[in-house]
Length: 317
Image 1: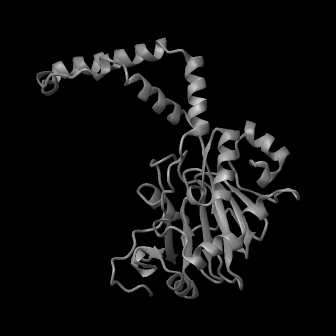
Image 2: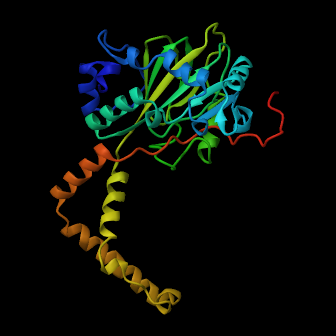
Image 3: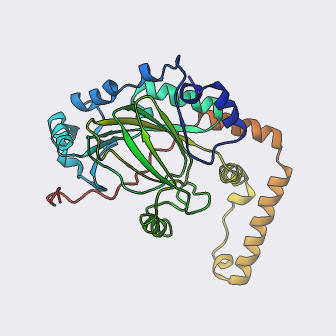
């Protein structure tokens, strides 16, 4: 199991040397195990039986999320309540599938081993004619696997350069300002994603996905490749350098509150840090960081949904 399950070996080879920067549409190879491993039945069963962890769900319609008490009983997912909200046009978002769905975990682990990029997955069940999330962009590339039904993806070129982690998110300024401008513009691409298709969506591309005009519920899973950057390497190097004994020594208060003395401390810390980096064994560090890249647990999904309404607030417009 690897990226080739989504896009085939030839395209994987291309991706490994030139990571995609523009959206592309793909069809998994005929012998791909993707459909048998991740089906609409698997995703819907978690909702129909109430076995999905309630804290990993967002129930959302037209950009507005419900409070968790609207679809839980005693803290657990309530299938009858979920069915009610789905019948009213609410999308159910199943976050971090890789942490609690074994087949998805296996796929994400294989992608991480192959690329060194951590991987997490999010499922979406959108009723026919509905829409959950509105315009936003993601901080990492997504492999959007349409399982059943159809979903329209309106896409706009990135409005910020190299969004990463918490930097330049679409739901905070200046990203939110870019989103407002984007809404008045015609999409650069529009894909009508059907069953068995995969949309490769690079980070930063604004998207407005919806099932409006459709007659069948849409189910898709987005596999997110948590790409490595120089930012990641620098952070790991800084963590290693900061473990050195001299940098862990206490600075006396008098050398903190006095600006001249504190400047000397800052210069000393800078020199210790740069000296540590200059003397570091790059080969050994690279081996260690590669092991970390292939094995470290993945960060949880960061929601683009607004905060849920307080309990008791109306849930329909």
